[in-house]
Amino acid sequence: MSKKSSLNKKQRKWLRRVIIAFFLLVVCIIINKVFEPAWYIALPIFLIPYIVIGYDVIKGAAVNIIHGQVFDEKFLMAIATIGAFATGDYAEAVAVMLFYQVGELFQSIAVGRSRKSIAGLMDIRPDYANLVDGDEEKMVSPDEVAVGSVIIIKPGEKIPLDGVIIDGNTTVNTAALTGESAPVDLGVSDNVISGTLNLTGVIRVRTTSVFGESTVAKILELVENSYDKKARVENFITRFARWYTPIVVISALLLAVIPPLFIDPTSWAVWSTWLNRAMVFLVVSCPCALVVSVPLSFFGGLGGASREGVLIKGANYLEALSKIDTVVFDKTGTITEGRFAVDDVHPNEISVAELLDIAACCESYSSHPVAESIVRAHEGHIDKSRVGKVEEIAGKGVKAIVDGNTYYCGNGQLMDMVGAKWHDCHLTGTIIHISKDNEYLGHIIINDQIKEDSKDAMTALKNVGIKRTVMLTGDKAKVAESVAAKVGITDYYAELLPQDKVSKVEELLNKGARLAFVGDGINDAPVLTRADVGIAMGAMGSDAAIESADVVLMDDKLGKIAVAVRLARKTMRIVRENIVFALGVKVIILVLGALGIANMWLAVFGDVGVLIIAILNAMRAMMKMKPNNP
Image 1 (spheres, rainbow, N blue to C red):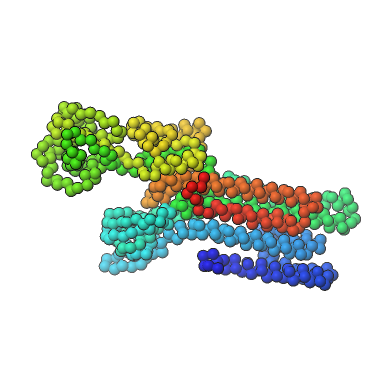
Image 2: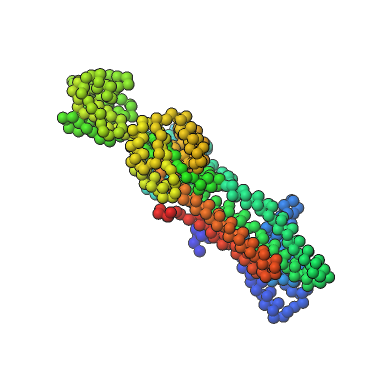
């Protein structure tokens, strides 16, 4: 057996007990068949394997009774097996306890494997930091590093704290946080995120947060707390088991007592028959399959999501995510990059390169995002000695002296002001017009760039049954219409103020939409909290995203929303399957047991067999989603 799949120490001891008890039970059955000993000899013989396999169950039931917790599965197993001994069904009594322990062992292994699905994520916790103290370098706990300290991170080490690279270049593996295997190249002035892995170079980093406020600490806290937030169906199962078990015990008692009183109260054979039926009733009615498989399904779903780089803050949000039919997106930073870029250049009687060169020179001293996008598009070196006086004209653009000539670079109002004969562009976006004095030279179209996977993400959402995709933006209607058409969004609302976005989400909710809102988690906190499910994009490095959303995507890949929805629906489907299967089989065997048709062996299947099948089904929630799986 490989190290990865090996059992832990407790499970190995448990397995040895099961094997020993099974061997002893077989020996006891052979002795009983061959020698047919009297009951006072057979009873102590069968008690040997019973004690080996069931001593902890009997002890646990007794301790729980002392503490007032009477009605649990250990109590049911203890009563059922002791009752079986009382009716002379020694082999059945041991077998019931043996198979119950097999089921418990199987449950322990299943839970352990589901925990492994988030083990990789939990491994992001850094063990130490190499702190620079004067001329020395010392290894300290990440908790001891103050903001603004300089740390050294060597190849193969986890990055212990968020910070900025001040020296060196490297390649970083972010797979533990994002689920993406492709490494990222980083250099001076780039941000590094705690919990990621430094692969190639030695880097010096100036920290920007203490460990308790770092990305890795926030994520670990999120994962550790997510399993405490139960779904409604989980809470129902817990309440159901609380009432179900006492009712079953009382029903079994009535089944053992009432019929013999009416049939023949003086006949031990009659009492024995109905007592045996009551024991069958008790064994099969144990709610283990429900109590174990439902939380395990959610546990597996949450763990499976974390492997995809999707952190869901609790089973309640997983359940809510499975029901959504409308996804609302913020535009900037979610559907688009949140970064302006030149889309096209339309010169008038000069070349594209000449027009872009003039515009870049005019805008070279500006820090405005539009100006920066023009400078980036120029790509070449800008000789600022060519640029003379630059004057900003409020609300219109700039006037600049370039190579001794006067140029104007800005909007249509600026062109009107200087008397240039300009014309509008048929393309949507921010249009920057350029003129030499009043001679119109052409215009540049600038847009917030649409993310590469936005269109595919909308298609994926439609494929998983999302009826409506909505975009909210403060941009002009013409820009919103263009973006919506390009990516395949069904509805859009433009020119909205931040408070208008909340109102629009509330309007959709009031119309009956089950709604998820997707934003960057920084400026969208009010809307994220108002939606049925708030989904934050690109949470690496964003504490606000981790804190404000119900679902956190660790990178900017919109396609993971559809993956999360599919995984949530798959988990809920598994939960429903287990509930229907477990209750259905148990009801059938309960009826057959009460009628005397089902024996103790069938009851064992109704309990342990159903439990194992339900656990196997629940473990499917941990399996990685196939890309094209509907």
